[in-house]
Length: 248
Image (cartoon, rainbow, N blue to C red; front, side, top):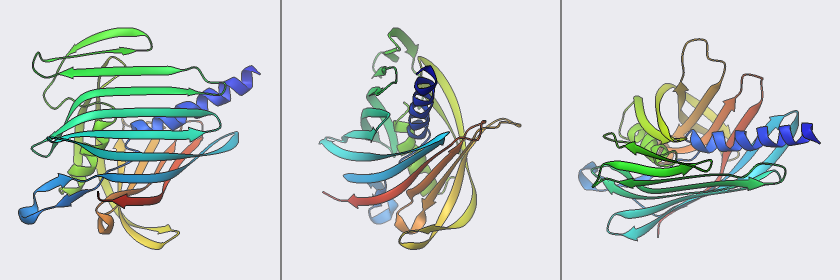
């Protein structure tokens, strides 16, 4: 039974890893003069994980307007092992994500429930929250992001032509500095045929054994088509786009 729990927890962590590493990207539409704005969006993905056993799940990502440049960004993941409910209320200002309220909850069969909350008070300059039951308070840095909002910022920056990006992300009660880079142009085989993509990676230190790769489709407004993560023990976690709809 303990071995089953260990596998279940590992698979649940794998699903969470996918979400925290840019697993989904929301496209923006372009106005005249190339001034991007956000649009309501819904995308669904298939998720597969292999660690001794194969497990399939599904995930849905939505972006909805709350008015006055405030948006709600949500992820819902369903699988036999674990469910994830993740949300961010944000402002979109000067082509940047300004996080306001982040919530995350992992629950499921044979996994330990996990929760994280972050509230961003830009007037006082502090972020407060709770991680694994412990409260924290951090001074906000310029451009500080959360584990969900940076994914939207990554997509926008790649779409805007950037190829090397570093973000300050509040996660686990402290700051992480995450580095991403576009490394190649690569045709990707999909159920709808061959799609031209930009291949990006999360840049880690020399000798790192964990690998995270992402494929964005320029002809589909840089929508993320696929994400693959390989763990040091050879376990693989993968997301593939199933369908997407953009508009009101």
